[in-house]
Length: 397
Image (cartoon, rainbow, N blue to C red; front, side, top):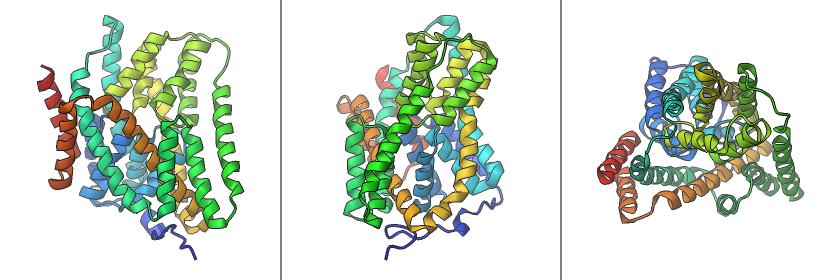
């Protein structure tokens, strides 16, 4: 008989998910997520790895099993995964105020940075040269993500089947499969294994692929002039329906802002995505840059609120459901499948990032040094990122 908690995992009951703020929780959350907002480079996989280091390894706020359930929940809802993970952790640690504080503190520093860069871009017409920064930071991020994958994998992978699902998700992601379809496939495989109904795999994957196509088609509309209302509603729509990485965001934005409406040129859109990727924090701060280009400071503020606001609502609605999902053998299998597929997607992102940043013996050496420090000295990931930036600056100069 399979335990309700899933593949050898303890049941995550209501006691572990109860939102009872501890003394000083709001201050702790503000301090932690402001720092992460300033230093979390490398995309969602890296951000989530840094969060795990802080809340599981260092602060012991929750166990790896609980962290994995929250990670799975972020993959079940649209929006920026790492931001929603911050919001989940804030809600779990500090209740409703913790939800607001953690999310806003993670978003605000990079949004301000991107807004300032957008101001410079409109005045000087180009993006800053930050190659030296990513030269040193990129290898450190690789080490941080691999360390997190190793730790999380120990909790999530409980046998040959879950290991195979994770590896298959990673391989198919590298081959170009849709992320939503892979998450659905992971869930379907686990449900089929538990219930003995293999036909459900085909059904769920087809539904996920069809949903992705419908969302893409729904983006098409007639050309319209730029107004603050339309700008806000557009980014509310993006935050409400978009699954996937920054590359998916690029395709989604281009369909409307460049092809259908003509609000931006291709070069402006590429510059906006570049700024979102090279600054710390969520790549969805691309919306801040685009909002400023189209409608100044008011546009930047409204676009930022629009793209991130749905995530706060989705997290508040979904987190209380996690214990109920774990209490059912069927939905627990779905959650287990999404967990291991999510790890596979993180691994695939790490491979892509590794190809881009591990380009010579120096960067490989930086990655190995960072990995060694994580394994032996348990050095805080923030200081590792800062050290990588300094190393990149010294080597670049």
